[in-house]
Image 1 (cartoon, rainbow, N blue to C red):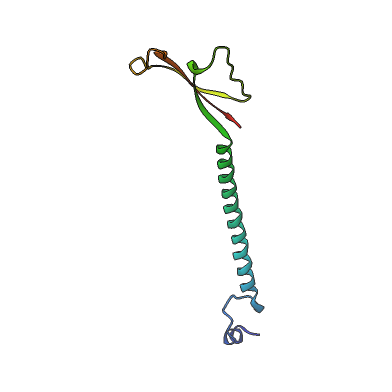
Image 2 (tube, rainbow, N blue to C red):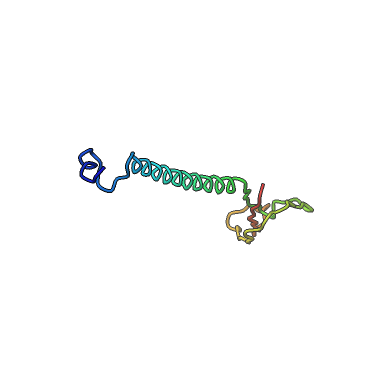
Length: 109
C-alpha cells in the first residue's frame, strides 16, 4: 500500500495501520485516569485519617480548686497544654476562692 492509497482509504498521514493509534490513545487515557483515581483516593484517605485523629483526641479544662482534697487525675498519655491562674475576685461569692487555677489538657482516647 502506498502513502497515496492509504490517504485515499481514509487513513491520516503518520497513523498506525489497523487502529493501533486509537488503541494506544485509549490506553494512555485509561492509564492517566487510573493515576487520577489513585491521587483522589490517597487524598480522601489522608482527609479521613486526619478527621479520625482529631475525633480520637480528648480535650478539656479542669479548675484545680474544684477538685476534692486528695483527688488525683491520672490518665495515660494525657498532656498539659496550659496552666494559668486567674483572678475572679470581682465576680465570686464569699464561699468561692478569689483566684482560680485553670488546667487545660489533651490526650488520646
